[in-house]
Image 1 (spheres, helix red, strand yellow):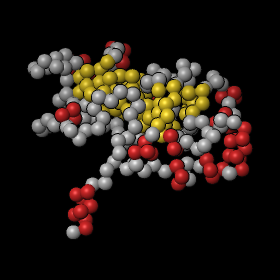
Image 2 (cartoon, rainbow, N blue to C red; image 1 turned 135 degrees about the horizontal axis):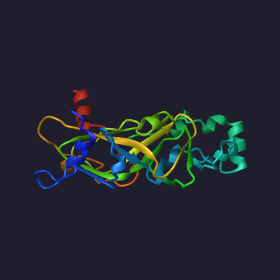
Image 3 (cartoon, rainbow, N blue to C red; image 1 turned 60 degrees about the vertical axis):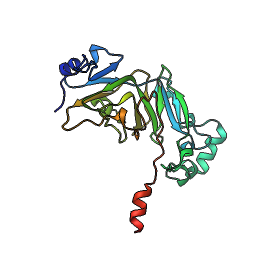
Length: 238
């Protein structure tokens, strides 16, 4: 059962254990909807370093006018742009040289990109890690985020798969951002909404689970290394 806006507000008061079920910082009543709360984009993005073709920019500062931009803007210098025109495959994200191995920690090394107030143009060929301005804590409820309809209609995906949170999660939300077209984002723009559902059963809070990777995260947080399960591998060989 999903919480209404007024019930979200009610759950921000202390519960019987002396703590609120919902914490949202900063909180603005204007962001409270009929059954959700609006979330906003922080001013920093992170990109996996080895997924950026040599000589190519992962994003470009918006000049305020579509006609002010040309393909050359995506490249660090004219030499890289000339190479792109000659050997396009070297810059194609389908090239296996840009693959991500989820079990390799080196593939999760990132570079930071500040989003200027004038806006940042994102590439459809790059995946970006962003984060919400809002820090949230959730207890006794199931939180999840999704895009606002206006974000979706601009073809910006704000989470690639991990839109579901956990009872007990505390931190800013990392966003896995992709766009269908070159698209402009701004710091502090609305980027999504958070919803809360009630659940059945005994609690198993995320912040008490020693296997949880992301509790307390602040800012865009790269992926934890995904292990190959030795137990399952062993069972397969029996």
